[in-house]
Length: 503
Image 1 (cartoon, helix red, strand yellow):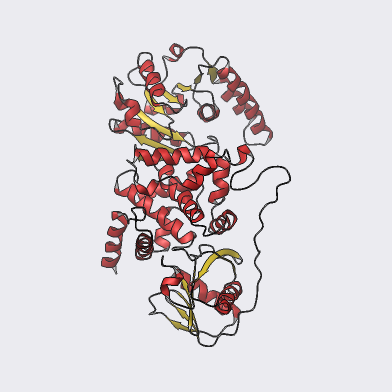
Image 2: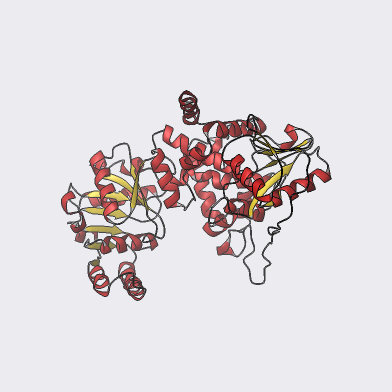
C-alpha cells in the first residue's frame, strides 16, 4: 500500500452485513474507491442502496454536504467476483466468525491481489495468527477490529498476529486515523483488549446474583451511579445472553479454562430457557407489553442524626468527599487521619469504606459502604451491615448515608460489595493485559472508553484509587472465595513497589 496517498488506495470490503456496510461508508467518506463483495446474491447492491439512504439522512441532518454525500456514494462499487478487485491496496474482511471460512477467503485473495496489498480481518474473537496460518505471506495479515455501529464508534483495535509485519500494523494504524478513528495496538490474544478486559463487568454481577447478594435492578443502579451508561444486567439483555455467554465461553476456553474467565451458571440457565434479553422479550428484565419495570427507592434527603463523638477516619479521595458532605451538613466531627481505614466512627460503631472484607468479619456494629465514584448528590450507593449488628444501628447507617447525600441500597454482606469489586477486577484484568504485552496502559484506557463507553479507563481508576487499596481488596476477595479468580496481577504488585519506592 502506498502510505503517501492513503486516501486514494482502492479498498475491497468483503461482507455486506452491518459491519461491512459501516466500513464501506467510512472508507468512502474518507475518499477511497471502495469495492464491496458478498457471496449472497444482490447483497452488495442492496447495501449500496441502503448507504444512499444513510447519506441522504446525514445531509438532512446537516452532518454531510450534498456534494460530499454524492461523491462518497459514487466511490462505492458493488462487484460480483473477487477477481474484479485485483487492484485493491487493502482488503477488509467482515464475514462470518468462522476460522476455516476466513482462512479460505484470504488464501483465495492471495491469488488475486498484489503482494503489497494489506489483508485485514475484522474478527472480534478469532486469533489473527490462526487466520494467517497457511497464507503465502502471513506477515501482511492484520486485525482491524471495528466496533458497531462503525460510523459512530471511534475505536479500532489494530491486532498483530505472531507473523504480522510491524510496518503493516503501522500503516493500518495510520489508515485508521485517516478515517477519523482512534486506533490502538493490540496483540492477538483471546478477546484482544476490549472483550478481554470487559469480562469482569459482567462476571462480578453474575457472581453476586448467584450468591443472591442483590437483585439485577439494584446491581444495575449501583454501577450506573459509578458512571456506566448501562448496568451489567440491562447491557447483557441488550447484547443477548446467547451472544454474551458465547463470548465468555470462547475467552474461557481460549485461555485454557483459566478460572478468572469461567462462565456463569446464572447466564447459562437464561440461555437454556430461551430468556435471551430484549430480542426474546425477557431476560433479567421483562420487555413484554404490560410488564412492570422494577422500581427502587429514590434519594430521600434527611437530617444527619445526632451522634456523639463522630470521627472522620482516614485520608484520600473518599475521606475528602465525606469531609465535604459533613461540612455541608454542619455536623460537628473530629478527624483521625492516622486511621488505617476510611469512613466514620459513630460512637461505638463504625461505617467503613469496603476494603474487600465483609462487615461481619470486622465486628459487631460495623457496616461497610461501596466505593463512591460519583460526587453527584443522590447517587446510589450499596452498603451492608454485619450480621452481628442490631436493627437500630442498621437504621442509623441508612440515615447517615442519606444525610451525606447518597441514595443507600442495602445488599447482602458480601465481600467488595458491587462497584469496588467490579472496578478492582477491571483494573486487575487490564494490568494482566499490559503485563502480557497485549496493550499499553494508555491503549487499555482508550480502548475501554471508546469501545464500550466506560466512564474512565482502568488505569485512570487506578490512579484515582491506588495500587495498595486495589491489591488489598483483591486479596480479601481471594481469601473469601479461595480460588484463582481473584489472584492479583504481577503488574499491580510491581506498581505497588514503585509507589512505595517513590514515597
